[in-house]
Image 1 (cartoon, helix red, strand yellow):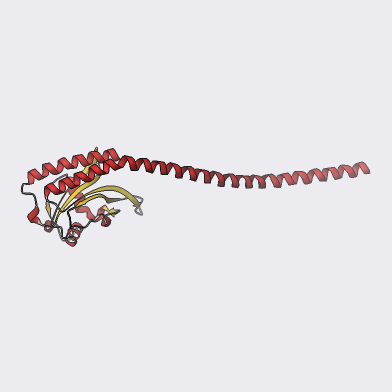
Image 2 (cartoon, rainbow, N blue to C red; image 1 turned 90 degrees about the vertical axis):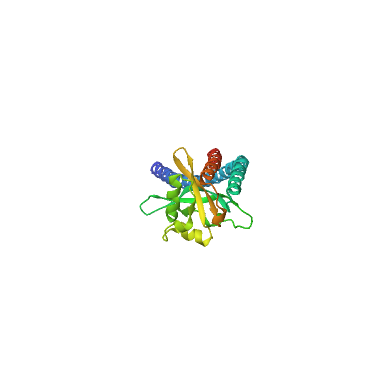
Length: 221
């Protein structure tokens, strides 16, 4: 009787121990996994921040000279052509349409203005390219011809914008990386009496400056 009772007691004790292990190990594992996950996440966040700060510092040092050259050249072409404003815009994606296709946008990244004229880059950040489809068509044509605002159709968003800024004429050329259109360089005149006298000379000069800006953007990108 005693042996039987002791055996029963032993087996109950073993059963309780096993039950505790079955319940305790997964619980402990869950707690340990949660702790490790939180710790690793924190470590990765700190590491990412440090690397991002390091990269940002490197980019800032590298890009300074590039942006200076771009600004000097758009200022140079603006002065030589008698324009009131010269801008560099770059194409990028930004969101998707319902069918999954990407939204093509552009943002002005560099701008030079004649004294007394306002900077317009704030109005050209993340702009849908479809809104200025006629300007995009002009960019794709790669034609440095000076376009009069009044020659555009009344349905043109570019015409509406130009009128709101008293822009009487503009010229635009693409910036390319190989065969890819990466941006544009545009010049505005608010007074047609200030337009270059010889179109052919202007086109040659504009293309020369465009090539320099294009080269600098490729370096940056």
